[in-house]
Image 1 (cartoon, rainbow over the protein chains, first blue to last red):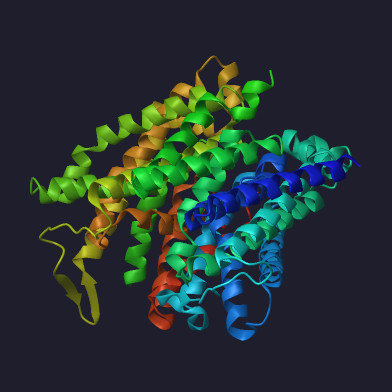
Image 2 (image 1 turned 180 degrees about the horizontal axis):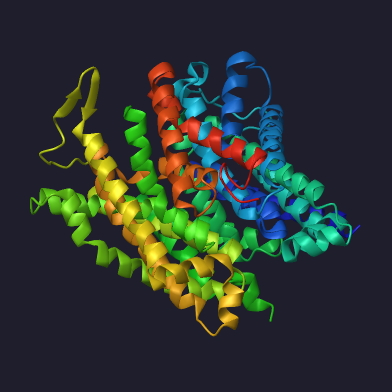
Length: 309
Length: 280
């Protein structure tokens, strides 16, 4: 029941956000807001595996870009599909990849999983670069429709609303998991996997659920990307900055709860948008790296940890 | 043949990780970034002062050693003593990797950089076999590097102490020795090897900051395949990977070769996680 109230509240916040963005009446607000929302989804998704279970996934860019490239493929073969259907497809593809990766490596120590995901990003990029159907290394062009299909307004507003809905879904999902049997199983794995296994927690099954959920959400976050950028090439789709941002946000916000990634993503995402406009994009990435290292060393519980003593 | 020489070079690149990841259990994913840093210091020494890249990298060894000690010190104080080394340690090194890369981009830009040395152009000819010196020299240097590290590990007191830490840090602590001090030295050595590895990297191929990422998969694939911390295993695994990669790039095109390392890594992890030559 508490979940239902939470979802209603989240929807209300989302509606207010959209109303405020509409009242400003400037397309840039939607472009910048979209990126922040996208990072809310990515950070929350990462945290389901990284924060709750304690398994670090470095292959965010791979899951994210696979979602985006699923859209490119669907756009070329079945252009009549609505965007939410494409996102679902992207989520399924990335979720399955996550499941396969997890099945091969999660039985080992956590570090092997991390290294394997890191290498997977490079390989997925190699595959896409060599796949001519989706543009290969030249990249793919996607024409963004001019108007939103469901309400009057620019198409970017539609993308914004879709991403807003996805962030409501992922944050609610993360919160629901945190307070469910699943979540308790996850934290048991994080705290002491051997003890959890011995007390009858089905660790491999839970880890696979977490990997698939987390990968699937990342894929869904990536699916609208081709419409957002209108030109997608492997180098930008697999950019390491997605991985750094997505890992930095939960760690800065605090990894143990659903709230941490949300706070981290809003703060860091906004800061980065401002820094990109006012300083330069390379420096804003450097800023994220430095913040990540600083927080990991100095404030291991993140911003949420400051308030919970 | 060029695969064999390439493998020797990969062994030199990996040897540092064999020490840090294999022996000390520190997952230093920023290692390739330090190798690129080594390439750039060799590049500066070469293009600004006109020194030989390999000689200058040997001169710079102490600087990299100190850098490694400093990084280990931060790591030790903030993570190992608190006992939550796994996630935060990984994130820390990931941040370090990223900072190093972005800094290099900001300072040098994303252009490919080259060095100049007398042995880069010509080749040796033995009947039908061509040995390009720009692969042969790195191969010999990396053999020397690994050989000297192996001698250090087997015959000196410190080297044996490092091996003791690798086997059982708890027992070492009970004997009254301080494992972090020894680990700091070993980690310093691991980063020091980046200086030489970086210099031979820039001899073999032009370097730009983001190629560090291509090496992450390779390095860890070799390290795991070679059985974590075994030097001879590392060399054999590196040569296997080098040969496989050069065959792949001959038959399917160079754009596929990064996938080889990952395939190896995944198969090794799934089938035989202790490596081809690992104990148990």
